[in-house]
Image (tube, rainbow, N blue to C red):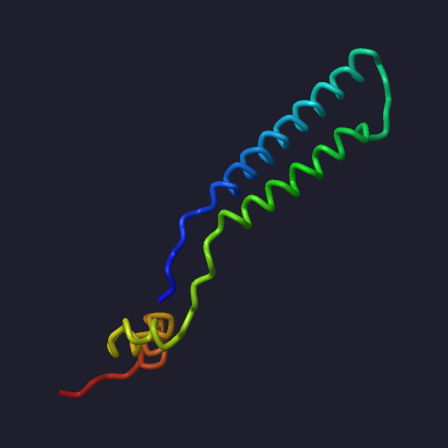
Length: 113
């Protein structure tokens, strides 16, 4: 078993800074679009500084997530199969059929006593 480490404090700080930067770029976009609406301006895109701020915030947030995330856990079929009993392995409810054609086939058959 691998020893689990505590999440990196540096990663959490980078994540928080990336999130705040992302929030600020969204607010700046809103302010820019409302300014354009107020002055009846028609601009094709966002200013370069808002775009760069957005890209930097996404990169910082992604880096923070990578630093905070724990190591991958192994997925082994043997360990999962060892946890289950043979009854649970053999029971497959998806193959049960309760609406079969027996009633239609044997509708006119008379049983003798």
